[in-house]
Image (cartoon, rainbow, N blue to C red; front, side):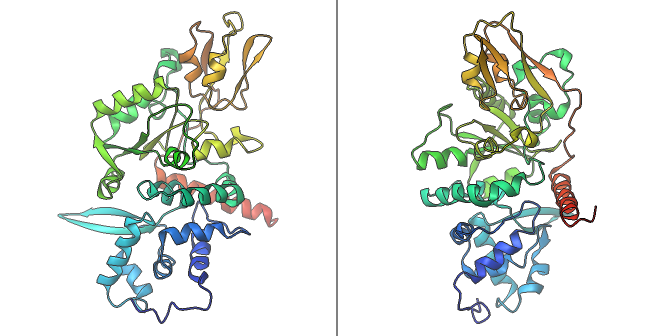
Length: 378
């Protein structure tokens, strides 16, 4: 690569440019006083690679378009392809394959930090990187992903908590999400791996392969050897164990999600950070909440212990659900030996966007609306 265009007096200049560029994405990448966000970028990009990534877009593009922007920085399109592949292998960008007749066109795009670059570090994760990620959550990224109150994930009930009268929509049914998937892969949970590295192992489960990737995104996982492909039958078997462990099932916030996370209240960086917000319930996309029948409750506190959101407390030896914290996962229902809890369907149903692209367009529209309000235009 030609370095003459990349040399500056400030060794962080390339990373600061990339930070500003990534901050324009639907899920931005804000600056902090400590500069921890630059250390996270340094882990994935060399300064030269950062200069290339600045010239990429969130919309997937062929290499020829990117090359026109960076041809003064590289010797050839072949060299650019190698650079992009290097970044891809380190989890710094996404690749999409577009089928055109008998040919497959490779498209490249910037990745968010999360869901994105952070999860893509699952095979490269170090203690230092994870500590920096948690610091960045505290200093800037939590406020960023919460700013629009549109979550990238949604909560669906565990299967045994659902009864026929609920008339559950397809997108709220785990069984249908599995059945509708063209392919399924499973990979290690990066959050739990991070907690293991810093000496705070999961209190809820010993399972570590808990992240499911669906449909076209499976190819991404297999190419980089982040996980393995499994059958629908195997997926159902693993999900049965996951539900027995009391984990929260959270697919991507779309009717056709490309991943399903299985989360707990002690490890999941999304849940642990949302719980720190003043009104965490505002960020949860869920169509259900739990309700206690006080006449049936025996005060055993099993539901209190299994609730990952700390939404259940005891009041005069009777369980009481805080509906502002309850996300309708259904784990308390399946754990109650007295059938004292039931899942209630909300009067107003939240219908998720059709796909991930529509989700992020919705987030961008909301950000634009908030900017207009801030500037007094509306």
